[in-house]
Amino acid sequence: MYTLIKETIKIFIIFTACTLLFYFGLQAMHAEYQEYHRYDQPEGKAVKVFNYNQQDVIDRLSIFFRLGE
Image (cartoon, rainbow, N blue to C red):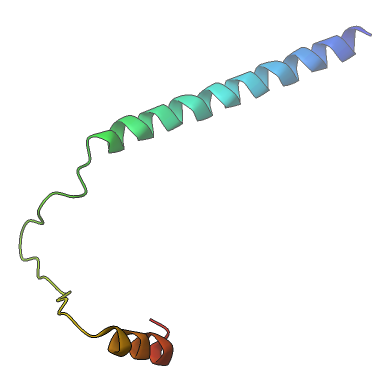
């Protein structure tokens, strides 16, 4: 009976420790990426690769169906 209680307490302590480690790890990752501004202007030798020009709806649908865009 004593060993069953002892093993249960050990499992509970290990589970609690792992849960706390996971929780504080997620908090640390959140704090790290909270200051990350992904919509800032790019720095360095960034090149704009997307140039949207007005196309007819029929042309866009044609490209969509042909290429699966």
